[in-house]
Image (cartoon, rainbow, N blue to C red; front, side, top):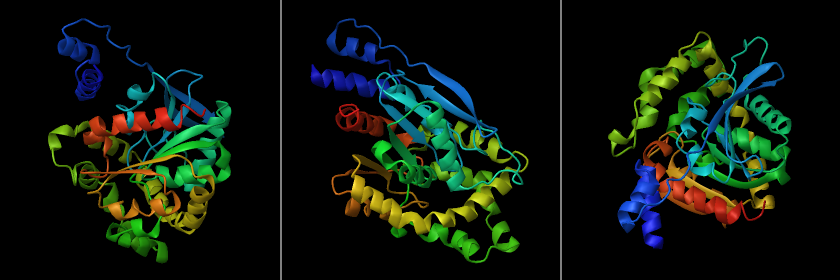
Length: 324
């Protein structure tokens, strides 16, 4: 029976209703699990409209989902319902991304420090005092800065292609590092191609074996938002500000060593932006971390949800729900 239940779960992740799959496997009828309701909300944080997706029981253990570039909480749209029966899931969009506001650069600092402060303010506004974090790409420095602010509040980490070690900044970063060294208009403009449709599509498709698993809605959605007036300069500001994360790596690592949060690492090994070399160093500071290297690229949830969701759910059930 346990094997049949697992088959039903995986069938559900692949698109078939779990109840129907179990009924077919057992020859009996069973109730179809309720579909989670996702709420689409906004909060005023220091005069900026911060959009977030929210689902799950209000008193459930909180799981904070922090997205990467160039996407938004949209990257978690398929994962959220798979957690929300038991977990209180919150997935914000940073200013300049997704459905959040995009204040003028003259009045708002587009920095990773500012983003962490705003997520902290959102959590305080919602009276969230403890949470696990899923961090990916930009979500890693945002989340780790948040952890430095509130180390005792972090109940666990799920790390997916999010860097905290020098080994994780490979050749892809060379033009960006050149901009860090020489913050000239020429170096800045040389990075403009990183916000074009070709590169946005590349981030979703490179390193993926079965492209039929990747919805083209992803890069169409993201590019439409990148192409908004003024957004290119917001993104170029963030490329430059990323340099401020690197000196914090030793502090991030010290947080790992001291706090030893339960940690699950699920990493797309074919990612050229945050390659596999950035995954293994975590084990130096988090020797009990559970590491899974997946045969996919940057946005692993898009084609490996059927592998990742059971790993994530099992990890949360064992390591987070039981201690909250």
